[in-house]
Image (tube, rainbow, N blue to C red):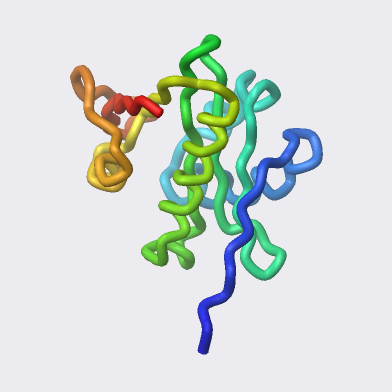
Length: 146
């Protein structure tokens, strides 16, 4: 049987909000225990949102937050648990990096959960600075030139 094809695209916050909410609520709030008040922030309305669908259902998301003319932050990278370890997270990140490059950003950074550092390292990110806690989860800042 052939693996189903994932569809990854940019979505506008106002129209894609229900799909983004579904994925982020399940991954960050239900699964990881992040407080809902910390999950939705002022950056959602100014971000470039990425949605990944499989069979017309959202299974993953991420966002690109402009920091200045040359730097963007990739964040809120999430894939529903039952779809992990199938390469979808890597495809979402490759799409995000390509879009950041198309938007003329020269560098991207992210706050990786420490357990995900090897995943981001494999995509060419490098660790910088000390580890820190964000929402009671240990994180590492990582950078990549694009």
